[in-house]
Image (cartoon, rainbow over all chains, first blue to last red; front, side):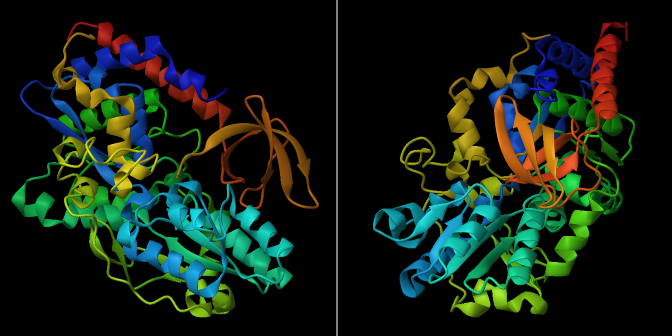
Length: 383
Length: 78
């Protein structure tokens, strides 16, 4: 497929690998955090770590909306179905996330609840149109990439007077999370997480543009390179980060220029601004309460807000004992440091969200099996 | 969840602001509500049934050239 195969070419990967090996200084290390789960998966699927010299390390970030969703929000969704008999529509990733009491939306569905996996929020609108006598709730989740489609659907439901449709909003914001990581004690004081630079999100940035990262680069003096999700994009961006670090620069650079501009998609931004407003605070798994890091529906759209239409109390729920998801999401631990990883916790039987989502770090480690040959991490045979 | 794929626009329905796109061999109907000035034969990035952005052919070629240039510097003496 065009714009995909070209960015996976073997010979170019070998050349970029050689260029990176030549660019790195042997007397220092380069810890590069990829915020997005999409990058984590590209790195593991294509073996990008094996193409890096030993002093270039990838640190996996929290950029997986399903992984950072606190369990209480899934408990809320289950309560919506069980107590209010709604049709709950959501994206596939959410269905298998463990909720309290060893339940999940998938298990509740198997027990007879009307929970439907949709590809698009447009499908949820259609289900509401086809079932006028039922309440239909769309479990909205995702970063800035996924928020604009939800905004379009909310406006459409409002315009059509679709009275049986509402949205349970769990949309979260990337810049707030990056700032939270950079301000965390592990990074600032304890030094247990070392981050020299960031791979900036691909598709989040296609909406918000590269401008929002300029603050971090300047304030925290860390370079940011907006990177595409294909393996060559990740490698080229690593080279750009390494060059910035070598030259003592901390700027926002854009590798993914075929899609991302500095301004982003202003049409999508204004639609989101019309429908949503900031929550004062929102809980993230791993990061805790992060100020101004999530969205809710504005007053003008309150009639379509599932949290106003139904009773959705804040539920404090804890992760499965022993699950290291919270530390893994902050980059403090790696999946292989978790006792549950690959023993009781696998994609078939996930204990934590990082193993569920196709973007989670644990799923990336497990699916591509690279953790089984740890010697490859420092292998020097490729160049 | 942020995964999105580049797809070629085959037909545009202005009345409904929808388009038919080709993803490899698969045809799909997507909404154009989030993008302006899309033409037939353009490539757009598809995410949950919506086109998020146009893909710039010029910039894609420029990036591919950058990869090749990086490879060339690798062969030069330090």
